[in-house]
Length: 500
Image (tube, rainbow, N blue to C red; front, top):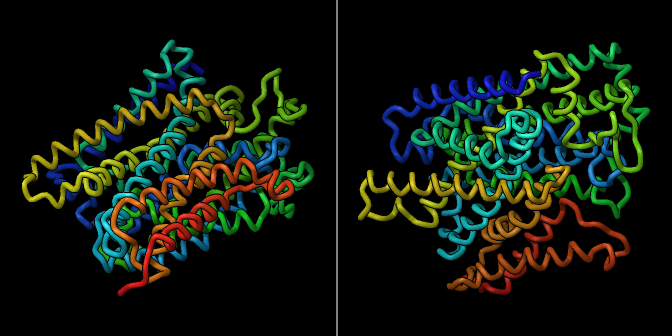
């Protein structure tokens, strides 16, 4: 299919987003940008959060993991172990963290750390959120941009850096004024397109296989694609690790993440925010199961076309299409033009929610938590707005540099990279909040807290690299986040004292 036609749909889609942004950002203030004036509709927030949580990684990478049964890590339906763990984590968010945030009337959730522990703890928590969300969001963004680059823009002679810069400029334009208020609406629109694309692709592939869903499941079972639980304790994908790790990841990457909670606490009533979390949880489980099912169907489709496993590859016409390359290759080269267009629209619909919210939340956190502009009485509304816009643009530049870094690394399974990064960057945040919630001890003043939170990931990195040797072949997987949090918690305990 002509890359120019596909790119025209990308531009058309962006113009729709600009229209929504223009409508929602009228009379916008800094409160509109930071927290949507605390007047967001919980139904829209819940639905839009699906797109933010899933992103292009779920759309491209999760289906690719299903047939990746020869490279270790997540294969078959193994990723669903993490999803099951998420359910427990979201219950903690809804009934422990959300009431806390509403009770304290927080704009930045990291202000809790100042109230409970110290100013240095607050700054440290915000810093680790910025690091965590920066790398997580740009890894997700890289995956989708790379697909657009390889399958569309390379043929048009557009370099990767130009593609990235243009897309970031698009995101800047429609989040420039409205911030959270705009994102609540654009995420709802984008989630709708993404889920519609998923359902259409799923049913089209099933029709092309010319078999019933029960026959498809039987064939997937014969290829070992339906296996969920890994009972080998040494493996990264051991089920108990993933259930516990999934719960901790959900708490850290949603409940302790300013981007995700910024939308939740923009809802007027706490009860509506809780309904949002639980509605989102049920929908997220179903959608991930559909993505895994689509992955199994895609592998069956390519096997029917002549693809086969060889060593650690899945070859078709001499090209390895295992993992992240599978879905884009099929959608753009082996399916009708209409399905290709639907795939591209769904893909960019998965791209923007994970990037626009991150850019807005990073701007909010840096302005409120690091610069403290809401506390400064010497700054007028217009001065605060100018600072916010400078920070917003600066983070777009940092996004560009990080995406170029991921391009240089060029990993074939971005979802594994994101989960690994989360273990190191969200661990100190988890430890800080756990210490505040589970103890009544006070930490000493000064930046010893920061030093502990920086040392914990470094120690965990060394542990992860040597775990197989130290523990008789045991490999650390998603439980790294919990280990990192426990190391941070222990360090804070040693750096604290009983309340006087």
